[in-house]
Length: 291
Image 1 (tube, one colour):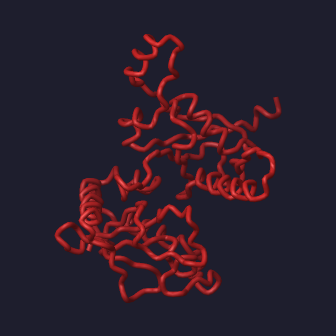
Image 2 (spheres, rainbow, N blue to C red; image 1 turned 135 degrees about the horizontal axis):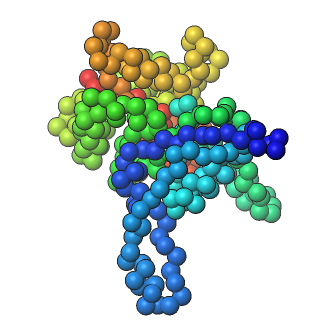
Image 3 (cartoon, rainbow, N blue to C red; image 1 turned 90 degrees about the vertical axis):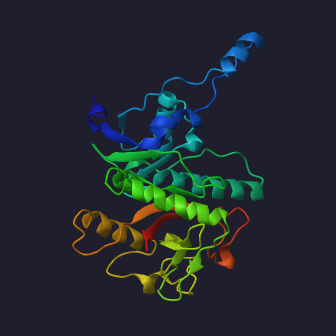
C-alpha cells in the first residue's frame, strides 16, 4: 500500500507524424506456422495503433520499462523509440551507455551483461511530468528531421509550413551537393545552408560545435572557459529557441524563426582525436534560422 502512494502518472506526447505513419515503425506481426496463413498475415498491415496518453510508473522504474510499456501498446520496437524530457533525449543516454558497455565487453571477452538504464528520478521525471515520443531519425534518405518536443511546439504555430519548406530547401541543397559553409566569425560552428539554386536559406548551429564542446571547429574545447551566464556548452541553442518562441507573433525584438533539427551529414567538423569509426554524423539539438 505504501508503494502505491508513490506511483506516478506520466503524460505522453506523441510526434504528429508518428500518429499518422505509425505503421512504418511497427514490428511486423509474427508469422503463423502454417504457410498459407503466414502469407495472408504478412500482407496485412497493422490497421490501428493506440498510444497511451498516460503511463503509470514508480520513481525507481527506468527508461527501458517505459519503452517496453509503449511497445506492448503500440508494437513499436524499443530501439526505434526516442523519448525526450525537458529538451533532452533520455533514450539516447541508455543507447550510448549500451554501446560503450558492448564495446568494453567485446574487448574483454566478458559475459553478457544486463542492460540497466537510468531511473526516472535520475532525470527528474515526477508525477504529471510530460515526455515526448518520436521515431524519426536523420539518415541518408532523410538527412534533416525535426528533433524533439521543441519541434512539436513549433508545429502548432503559424510558421509550421514555413519551417517544413525551409527543411526541404536545405535537404534539396544537400542532395545537390551544396555543402554547408562554415562562417568565418563566431565562437562555435555556424554553417550557412543553401538550397538547390545555391541560395543561402538558413544558418545551422550544431550543438556539439558550440564553444566548449568536443567538436568545436575553432579549437575552443575547454568547457570551463566556455560557460556563459551559467549556460553549459551544447545548451546555448536552447536559449535561442526559447527566445524565438517568446518573440513569436508580433516579433517585437526581431528574433528570426528558430527550429530544432537533427542532421545526418558528414560535412561538419569532427575532432579527429575522438572521431571513432562508429560515429553516425548526427548533430542533435541544433538550430536552423532563415536568412
